[in-house]
Image (cartoon, rainbow, N blue to C red; front, top):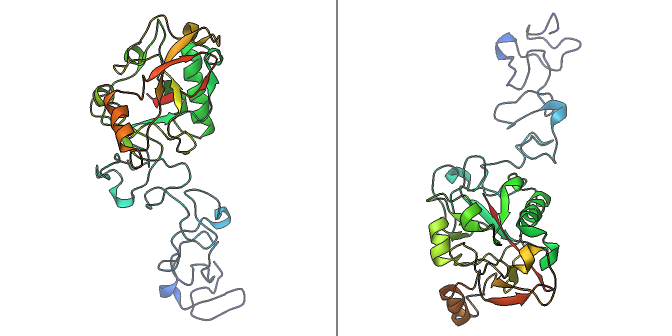
Length: 285
């Protein structure tokens, strides 16, 4: 602070000096008799929302822009950056759209995410049930899901199945990356299936009528202990596994969709040769 700052006189080295009583670190003239401005690391009340000084940046999520306004951030009601969801003031309230799920104060779904793999594989390319899980985890990581290491594939062999291996939490719903709820919880999933279909990839692409390797019954248990592409290590056309259909466009094909729901085609529709190239269902645990 300059020796004469606060005396009400504009002296050399001062940008402003309305008198000591009017100097403020949040006002138009600071305690050092400098005019408040964006980038000075002081928040000018009523004029600026934030000010990180040299840290102001227009590209940072959760930061302060070069105009001293808040940048993209959680709880602003806009889906952006690393967010899974953002309902603004409804975050953390338990309120959510009829077809959706709650969003917490950290802009994360209060639900388990499930997606259709954007990549398709031959039966032998999967590399066993563990290999399927790893493929789901890698896709989730590429999509920058913060819980990528917790994803598992909906797939079975003689030793493993979702019924055995998945975490089942009553009341915790399953949701697609686009925010659409597909089942209320594990019991609803195995009883009724994902009614809206797991038709959205980790990258957000919507894909109907895709064949999916499962080897799994609607109950989540293995469907046929002998039909799983040799534990997902064989791409031989002589080997087969039961597969599912990712989903049907119920608006344009209501009859086909009703059959898909009733007969649980999402996880078991017919058998497919292991040299086929099919997708995986990936489910957060």
